[in-house]
Image (cartoon, rainbow, N blue to C red):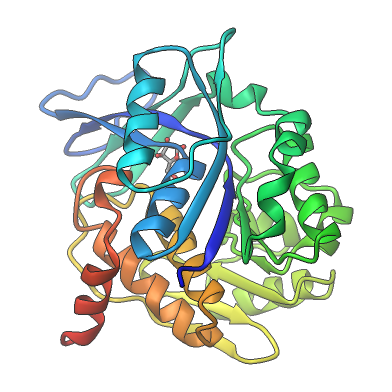
Length: 307
Ligand code: RIB
């Protein structure tokens, strides 16, 4: 049976321009290719988890507009339960303006729109889906109060919470007692721990600091270098896979969606990280967020190959 994952988070439409290099302030760079693709950290993670093999319910908000309808249609194509994707009548769907350079690195500006209206009440209305979930996956592209409610509700029901603290925010330390797995990148880990993460020793120090605040598993994602793991089961770096990057947008989202699926299927932590690293590596070889999230078969074939 498929594991059940509830994802609480944002949905955006990404306006992506591929350019040679990211413009400096006040500069215009010509020559790029333009693509519109479904995105948003929450929706990306929901789609990644569904393609990796989970039964996913997504709790989010979209506007009553074309982008919202397209997002919903995409979730349905991926078999995601959309009963708790609310249609907001006062704000348009979220939009992200993304510039991707020749190395696949990006720069993103988000207009949250309807995502900013995802409320505590929306979570409470969807309370019944928490009961049967194996894991709850949350990020920070929605109001923090809603994040706290979702994490608290999961804790009350004894369901593990995987928090991807992106984009970076200062968090109330009380939240940490609800978190089973925290997956910051280097910037987020630096902000949350107060230790600047630049390499493996500083990642270890930051992970230790966060673990000391009561989080059982801390995974610091470090891009092409891999993931620093701090847990009772394993401590140290797990390397990422070497690929030619086209667009790193949503690599972290794909990592989190695949990780949640693998953990909900009771993979060991190191195997789950390897599985998620493979999914993320595949995703950076294609342009776009949800457009680049791989299916279970593609991930398994990749792992069975020379990697
Ligand atoms: O993490 C990548 C995502 O961040 C993009 O899809 C964009 O919508 C922003 O939310």
